[in-house]
Amino acid sequence: MKHAKQRIKKGYSYRDVYSIDYWFLDVIPQMLEELASVDRLGIPMYEYNKVQEENEDLSDEEIELIASTNWRSTLRTMAYYLREGKEPTQEKNEYDDKMFWNWNTINEPPKKEEKEIRDKWMARELEIEQYRQEQLKKGLEMFCENIERLWW
Image (tube, rainbow, N blue to C red; front, top):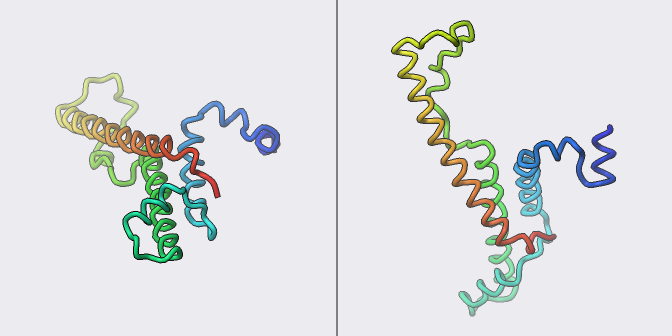
């Protein structure tokens, strides 16, 4: 209740401030998806003009339909990249199930088999982190390019 009151009053709670990255990557993609699904979506003028220039023989209604579809796709793509930047769905560590998480032996030197799996697991984690960062960068670049167009 305390956090709900803070969000009503300030638009955020102190919990959101503790982890702005988590809040942003949790809330913004949801907002982008909702914006993409509204019935009367505002279409950025550049999108409308681009479709009009590419299709001079189309009616205004047809241009608006194509521009709206393109803009909705842009919003959903942006949301996808941001989600992948938070928690990848396309990349998984196939060594997760094979890792030996035995806290009783944490201070003991790993057995040869355990070390090999741990090294593979770590290498895969680094690949996933690189993928996550690439997706996040794409999403944030799109967000920055379109920040002034994110309206209903």
